[in-house]
Length: 119
View (cartoon, one colour):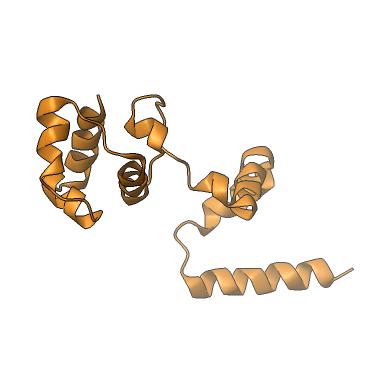
């Protein structure tokens, strides 16, 4: 089970399993044991592999269907996303800004700031 998940993650990244192991600091000879004998890496190696691929150890072991979400680790970003989902006017602003350059966004911010200060 572990090797199947590991091989799939490697394939998605376009990297050979032995190269991924090596980049994780794991002896690449271990890969054949994982594949041919169904061995599961020790916990320290599992943690390195999980970090490398941005997934949880549970995901590697087949106990979890979803990959780790980076959004859950950033409370501010999560709050912004929640506002985008619940406030139509915020969604409208976001949609308008999608193709904007940094300069366009800075100009728009100045306009909104000036508008909000005007009473």
